[in-house]
Length: 254
Image 1 (cartoon, helix red, strand yellow):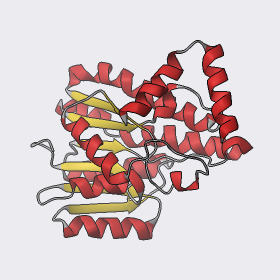
Image 2 (cartoon, one colour):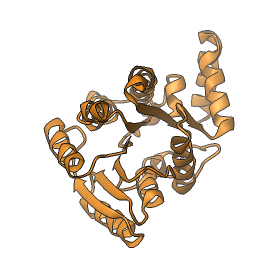
Image 3 (cartoon, rainbow, N blue to C red):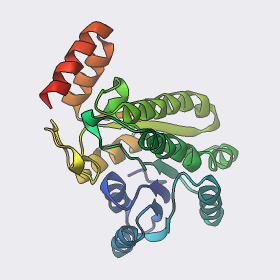
């Protein structure tokens, strides 16, 4: 953990990677600002972090609610400047090869992309004025190539990936560090719905450790696990005819 890290904001903190990150950072002298959709689960996570010595503020907020997010985040930052914001909240349609209806597609983009903007944009002018701060955006290895089993998820995460990569360069002169996180399969409530084999599956705790280490080292892209990262990069780099053929075979195998 970076020695100057004192106040951390995490969205999607009521389960999965967000919960694991909250517990990883929880320690005496650390302030945690936790946002999650499920009030009961979020309260359990907040109590567990307090038991580890952290000071915790939590709120059951919908990350798509722009006004509510801005008001709460600005209040938290007014009380104690945030050092690190992890825009982690995300969903998938969970429909696989069955397809995605319009409502599900719009919900995925609202949470995965607008949710990131609603988390980060209230803090950008503040971090810029302070000439310091760190931003972490949760993308996915699915951002490397659009997947037929999750079109909206792949597209939303690709947008987050591109946004983070551009922000890293644009905001560096202002002293703001930006990292994009691209996990493979991680054991969470979201992946629990998957009815197919998930290669190189990691626990949420393993993922949190990898992410925190990458953030402490200011890695621009934190992609893992390595074998899955290499495969996704290769599929994305292949000519479209070859990558299409490969993904059709994978989809049929499911």
